[in-house]
Image (cartoon, rainbow, N blue to C red; front, side, top):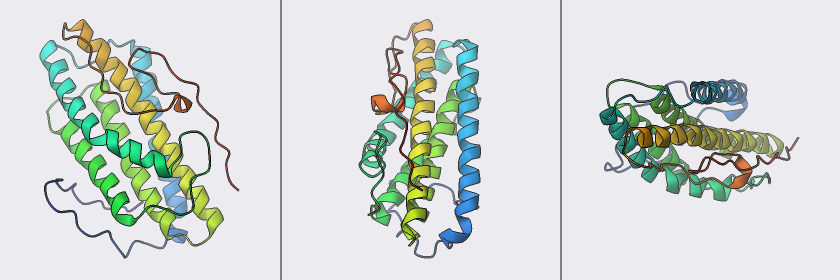
Length: 226
């Protein structure tokens, strides 16, 4: 994963051509793995914090809840098609991803959308566990795009498959983490008298993500390639 990411461009500006000079994946793979593990640990810690809070640690008053619901709905609109497109190349049923990777322009679009989401969710002042959970999950999707980009450059098929599995697992954790934050936002909105706010991302039952009604699917164990 590159160490210096530029500020996310607006989707209204034509996206630059996909980079042709990314670092040698064979030298960056160990760093990618460690950053991936660290990012996943952060999101899981946020999920635990949200669960232990029982929904009490939220945006606060009704105005804050409404503002967060508005931001989360805008983020959902941006990310939902990205998650659906990712699922075509990073399966959600535990199957191996295809070694024939998607084109670089598509992956660049994933990364741009995830960056725009992070920016949109952090533009307001103040912070709370729910907003932080959404931001962290969107940030993981940036990691997914970066890891997938490096996998596309790897000639060794075993190593490429390993990196694709990393991208797939991080995508899964991002969706699960988002679902936990979205469920708490829904609870906060109801408590604030705003009614239900369903901003969950598309998720297959195999991911174990929380549904808008609070239920969770069974997590599918992946068959790893070595």
